Image (cartoon, rainbow, N blue to C red):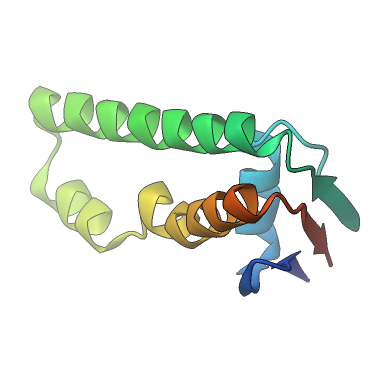
Length: 107
């Protein structure tokens, strides 16, 4: 299943179901077949996504400071970070806020 985010201010954005569910939850919405982030809710959604990214990066820095073994460090280096996953969605949200339009999703 795919999550397809749409806005009149940006190109469509498609995510696989686990990642789509994760970002929808981070934005404070209930994951499901469809939903909406209204123009008024966009600033809070952006703040929530940016906060989640900062939290993940802080956890990563903490794990690095503890000195986990090299194998797990290599695995983390190859992993796609939350920052990379949400960057296109944050861009869509910012464009939508500037145009004062909603962002919707469907599966």
